[in-house]
Length: 170
Image 1 (cartoon, helix red, strand yellow):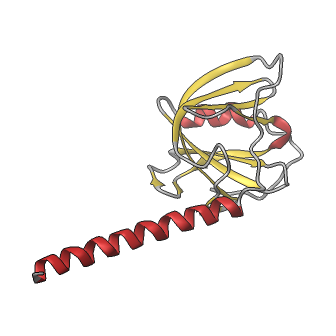
Image 2 (cartoon, rainbow, N blue to C red):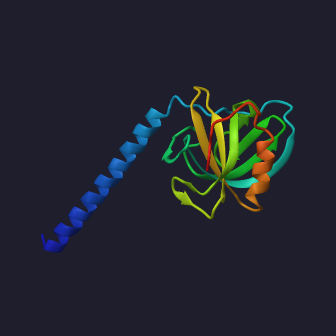
């Protein structure tokens, strides 16, 4: 066996070790976040006011944009549609069941620039702060495919009950 063959074997071994470590870390994160539940299904008679093509980027712990949460079905980036209804926000992501964030769950909606795996122009992300079933506060980030994010943010802010004050900043 030549020195070159040994170097290749070591490189392959290190790469496999790194991949295995990544897989185990992701599974540990999924177990950690298994108790956090995203609400599924749109309520009957919800009237759709507008639809927007979006890229769902991530969900993170509140005010910790680099700490991803592995909430099913919001664990992975996906293209999809945000439907603004009179009762809340429906996230229809490719290959996943529809997540419905009722107005009562919404704490704030604003703009952001940074989240895990994504840095964009100033205010290029829409951040939706909401409460999961177990009272965990979650920040979910979307990127609007076309149009000005501020228009969407303004529309979404109308759904947020006035009593909520999280002190959230972006």
